[in-house]
Image (cartoon, rainbow, N blue to C red):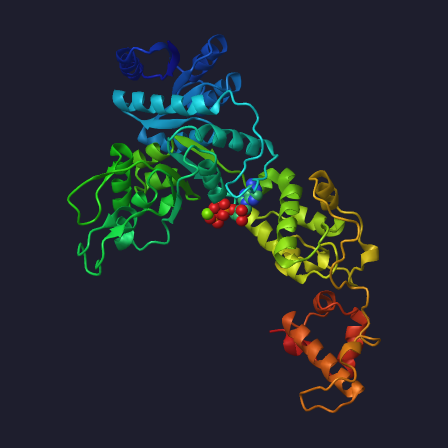
Length: 509
Ligand SMILES: Nc1ncnc2c1ncn2[C@@H]1O[C@H](COP(=O)(O)OP(=O)(O)OP(=O)(O)O)[C@@H](O)[C@H]1O
Ligand SMILES: [Mg+2]
């Protein structure tokens, strides 16, 4: 028997829940008349399920939820809410309640919700810590952070079943990567993973995109077309940005989830489907339900196993590992041998709040790779917007190798077993900074081909002037930035600017 606690100050409601549970036969039910009593009872009995009213005397449902979860994190909590307290029910879900039911509570809804909750909890609980998630292409998903470890546990659990998964998280937190990991670690891994971005499809083409169409079923349908469901048969269908699914399509998707059958546009036959649905969104579905722009019943269907991805701010302990991974990736992509991040640059990157999460981190590291001339990623190659956001001012003179201190990433390279030799300088570094010296050796004496005088000094001056103007344009007339990125000592740059009568301000736009 599963132990259930029903807490509500309304006697009639307690009774109706109790009788629905009694009818089912699997539950032993206790009642509590308010929040405080509920918590007291939870101290004595480990309940499998607690059904709590949001608005109760002495201790409200939200606080009771928190205390019961603290006493026994394994208790599945379902909130009951009247329309007036729906906001609180939504925040209760964020605080760890499995879901909420609107009053008056219907017996069959309650039982269905309990069944889904138990299935999900069964999967989630009692799992051993898992190794890093291996992707189909051998890539690893980084996540030493404790929240990510939980996510990995859920992924490895859900990989063994076919229930829908709903992945939530802000932009760039890795939702698609998790969807791919669910597929890659499942029994369906040798079948297709088909992704569809719900925000990118025009509303009138949606149905055909998902279910296909018969020839001639609408203007422009001059060929029979297979939809994504059929295409993904036996595999996984990833509905990205599911919050952008038009309402009519929400109804149709719900039907497919319930009946495992669909009808192509213009066809008069139903086709059975065996597809695992993984959906993702960064939209507030609970709020959308209130505004009637997302269907509650579809939400329940999709949200059988929720995976919530933390923002990068909430997993800063993974920052080093992620950076190391991206440095390795871009070394390969750009044929460089960057050995890590300089200490002062790293301090800035750690100070930043990363609103665009891992995707933004990846973009910033790539930007730094392109701009960087040293063997470590330095302060000078950090995008200006990021410097500004962190209140960082660049030093007057560009850093040279000698001023670069040890880096955290270098040590995490060592820890990760990546072999980076000491002498990683595989490209031109900033050791020769003064243009005055032998900077133009390579073209001295060579035919110019551009009709200019065959004179070393004249050619050198033309080149220097053009080069400096080009660099100033690129860095919007900023002396410090130009000096850093174009690798000219600031003193030299200022001297040349004066010599050639260049006006840096002309290039600020
Ligand atoms: N844990 C991780 N380990 C390694 N790389 C990751 C991880 N999470 C995300 N990434 C990388 O970060 C980038 C963004 O991830 P992804 O596209 O999955 O995010 P998303 O949440 O779907 O973003 P959006 O909301 O913008 O669609 C990808 O290049 C992905 O490979
Ligand atoms: Mg995405």
